[in-house]
Length: 183
Image 1 (cartoon, rainbow, N blue to C red):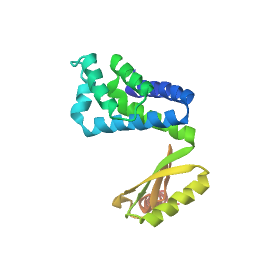
Image 2 (cartoon, rainbow, N blue to C red; image 1 turned 180 degrees about the vertical axis):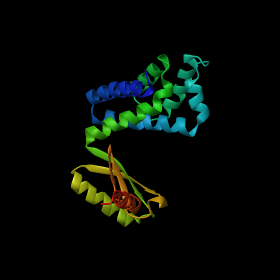
Image 3 (cartoon, rainbow, N blue to C red; image 1 turned 120 degrees about the horizontal axis):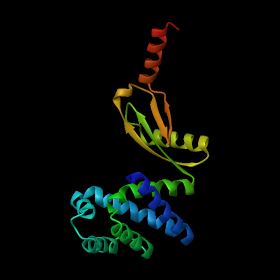
Image 4 (cartoon, helix red, strand yellow; image 1 turned 135 degrees about the vertical axis):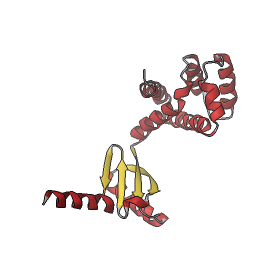
């Protein structure tokens, strides 16, 4: 099985357990998964230990136990992490965290997106864009703002699987294509 399929299944199972335990547990599991994924990204040596087939499952569980004690993890999260260790799936933790986050956003009616502009936007302008999109979508929206001078002007908005490209680069490309076709 591919890592994405495995991650989606484990995230779905943990999400189902969390739903039975309530909204607080759902949020707590998401926070704990994010912390673990962040630790693995920040400390490649830790990620290597958790993924290594040479290191025994018991050793991995000891490392996990020490980490989990410092996180806001409940018994369900502890057991979930130990299950991942038993099944040799600790390497999928970052992907599981990503899928769990998507499930949590969907359940809470939150959309996530990216806005790419040619120049850095002021915080006030970022908030205007966020509010306009929130009003149009009818949902809470979380946006990340990026700068890419190559788009020349305008912006590119990506929310979910939808992309709205109103950049100057895209408009010039469309104009060039129309001129080429003789339209």
